[in-house]
Image 1 (cartoon, rainbow over the protein chains, first blue to last red):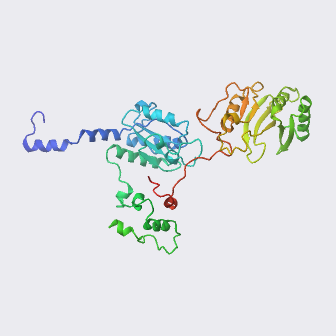
Image 2 (image 1 turned 135 degrees about the vertical axis):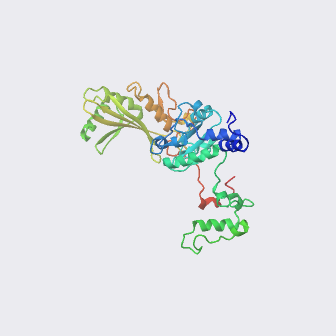
Image 3 (image 1 turned 180 degrees about the vertical axis):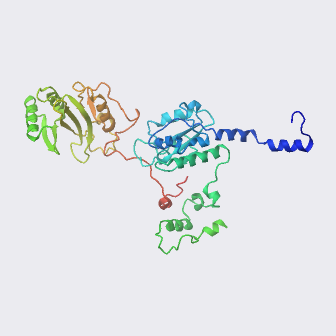
Length: 220
Length: 186
């Protein structure tokens, strides 16, 4: 081509087939999302599941994150795999502060998301009390598949195309908790909905899928 | 393990050295326990360690307990082991709560903590054990060279393993009880 083998329309087609235009930001994020280096950092029993995520059975190398770095200065993300005790929290925070920007955090399991079963004097009730968390993964512990799923969500976040929440996917915007209230008091519709939620299935409320009063007005 | 008569003989031997040391004995589930006066705990431990036919020269555990509605409220347990005969004996010192009746919530002030003599001179291994008992139960070991918290953060307030210490955690809102807390989401 450079020697002038192609000309005119042939040259245009040749270039079109071989080039892709994008923005620098997109290209950069694409690279980042596919080479996220997690920090070698296990907090508790969830760490075992995190380790097995690296093995050939689950193989996080498929997504380019098999290189667990032993130094926070080489890592891109940290997986909080387990409970964070009050005494450990400053250590975790310091390790997080040492990771270079941009950095991401996955809170793996119930303990690091909310304190889990450890509602006691020693454990921080959720790691997002002292550091920002991007992805929460439920489970006690989450299976490696669940962790990989959360990791894929993080990748989409890094690419700048975060997954939609369920309200967007199911066209349920407007049913948030705050939308049920007007003046600090629950609306009659909210009380009715809460009563339906706790009522036994064989009650007079009808089968699942019954239109709840108040729902139609709000969606309309 | 000394049997029940053997335990009585031990109690008698300790009493001969210092009257009023042994408050009682208990022999349950093949475990021998000497209940001693906290003032005489060092005498009892030293007698058990240095009497040739006893020879309980190893302190396998030192821990505290809180028996809250009961008085005396606290106890410090010493689990001794004779390695030659592989025999164990428990020594239990009952401690009154100086802050009783204050309506405390597991955070008694420093000047109102129960006190007992440190056995560090007899069993050097007790150093960390006594720090742990102090950390969790607020029991002061007199004569300990470095009595400070060992597991909880240094600036922690309260004695978390006491029975009147609040359990902690946070109330969790589920779908069924969220309408009881108006505007909880803010």
